[in-house]
Image (cartoon, rainbow, N blue to C red; front, side):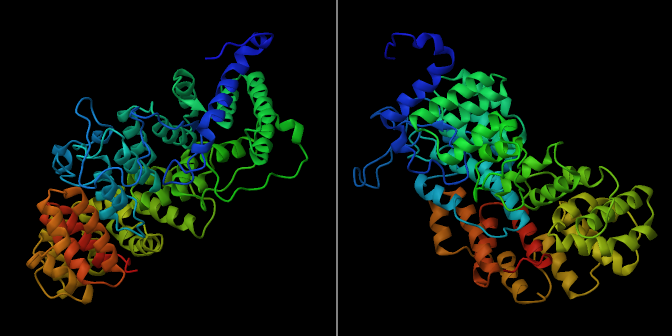
Length: 522
């Protein structure tokens, strides 16, 4: 650290961190900031990440193109790799410890980051399990943590902030790239004070000016926050937009009567949180799914909580029981849209608790139709299939209850107890048993059946399996099934066959049932 002389020590408590950060920016961090630090473009630039020194083992070191042959894998021989971090042991997931086999990190990361549209609930649950799985790192991981970051980003993309936070805690969020994600999770879940304390306690994390100013204000040190902002203004290290927002954040009364700030098209969690603090909140329904978690806080209105919970339940980011808890928090004071779903769920829940089969038969069809329209069939099935199965319902409603049960974890037991009423039910029962007996009712069923009668993964899949690249095989199967639902039906056969080939029989059956029962055909 350079030695300072003159009167500067008088201001040292507030200015020292700011000037140190300015020195960091001036020495090269600004250049690094020109490139995105994450595949997710909404992450806050909460810490400055200087370019790694040669041989420093930085998280994502730059490697010159052509510097080494492609078939050379580099790995760390001493010390744990960040990429091995996981929350679910192989005994829990059923996946092997050597999940990635001979795979290359870059190829695995590309598969994880592939865009997926309307992934079936069973496949989304499988993807989440894969992201949380404890496994040996790829041979070329090199201790950089690139695969870990991709897994965390996939969880953030589907709004699974609690799972991402747990994975970050397991990894230890001391590295700048990890802390950025941890900081944003904290901002969206209302635990920012803990993140700010971590930032203050770790000198290796160089906070950017907006992040430091925010944290100083959160800690109650408004004078230091204001002084840091003036330093940033003088040094030109905040944009006009950041300056306007930070100034209003620190002294909102000064701007009373002024027109609202311009709304950013893609706010970071830090910007979103400060806009909320100055009384200009942005609705989360048009923002990335992770922002919906902010509306689960007690500070949000009930309608906002319901809508956020529904968005998150669709991807499995929150448990169905949490959705039910929000649905039943109070009585709806209006009707139409979300309120009709709330009323239906409350009425059905009460009728089931009372064991009133007649009332359930009256409510269930309409409630189901509304859940189908909201694409919440699987959370609904998880919540209500078991109690529905205990009631003697009239024929039309019992058939509906059976289909609902096929979308629940108890699908096989429901199939074993059911005498098929027609050929379609017979085929569904065969899928639940893993045999695909009976006549397929449509072209999709005819694509599904061979995966259970005579499974045949494609040549690409077989090559992955030969190299022990089970994780990549699972990702390939998910993408094949997605493409199959959009019209390339042979890929449905290959994808389901591949899931069964890697031992994921339950996932294959549940996926097949969802394909037949849900309207998710592209």
